[in-house]
Image 1 (cartoon, rainbow, N blue to C red):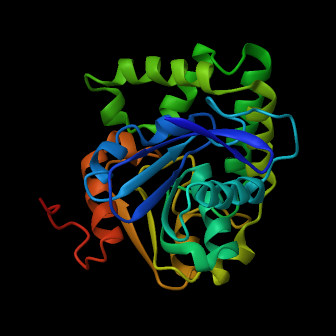
Image 2 (image 1 turned 180 degrees about the vertical axis):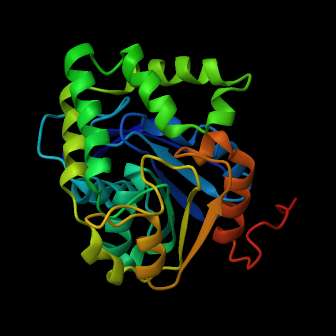
Amino acid sequence: MAFTEVNGATLWYETTGDGAPVVHIHGAGFGHFNFATATPIASKYFRCVDFDMRGYGQSDKPIQPYDMEVWADDVAGLMDALEIERAHIHGTSMGGMIAQVFGAKYADRTDRLIINCSAAKLDLAGRLTFQNWIDISEAYGCGSRTLAELIAVQALSRKFLDGPNGPGAVDMIQDILERSNRREVYQRACRAMMEMDLRPYASQIKAPTLVIGGDEDIMTPWEVGETGAGQTWLAENIPNAVKHVIRGSNHSTLFDNTEENMRVVVNFLGGRNDLLAPLPD
């Protein structure tokens, strides 16, 4: 674990494993914990870079304008600090939105791109989701049980929540939200997602791209209303994109179906055609 200065902010980061670098970009609210189940698997094959984005976790949390480009520029700055010229990029949820911008703006620094449970533009239902997050955090704080329970329902499959790990997952979400967030930044991130339109970036992405998500995703679904551009839109509009739908998973495939998610991710990053092949020893 270490800290480095990036574009005027101090960012916490950690590297694990050896091989081709993979930068993990987390989603809104969760800091690097989003990849807690993924890194132990991916680091067997790659050099994983986990970090808390500006505004989260152990990194600086300045009150400033936030959008996907701000965070994408920080990814490039972190790579500079670590002397990484090119890397695989894996973004989940809001991190997948940032990954789209990075893959377009820094195409020459992107080897392979993974957009995990994300969107290019939210429809009204998506915008209302994050307005609810804003309202609850304003009334009760980011670490409230109400917010944690709502996000658990929106992010994890019903089967997972109803199983032995469900109650503990809600406790974990509440704890991470409490420790990783500053309310003003959390709310600005929600507004950034509500206001974004990343569709112009799609055609500028040159790297082989995997669009992956659960078939039960209710936060950033494959199919959205007319005003939105969801996972299906991304798979159809990014050149060289392939898609993989994880059956029985909701928004957080990294948690409610870790094995299949990471098998597909590792195989894709390794350039294998069979994404569901057993992982190499």
